[in-house]
Image (cartoon, rainbow, N blue to C red):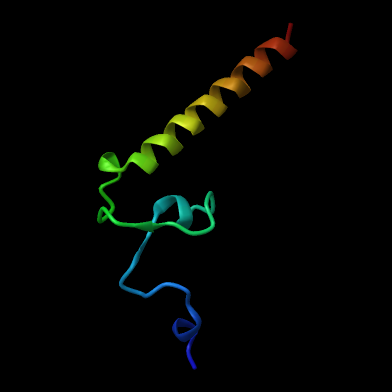
Length: 64
């Protein structure tokens, strides 16, 4: 048996970039990597931007 025989997804299925990056455990891309059209990508980017803003605010507060 090969490694692909044990895979939970088929090779032809596209893994979401957020899954590839390790941010989510399992998410397949159904938009052929057109992330700008993906509502999941929009939510993840908004969340990342919010978290980055919180980090900057905390750093400024700590330096005072």
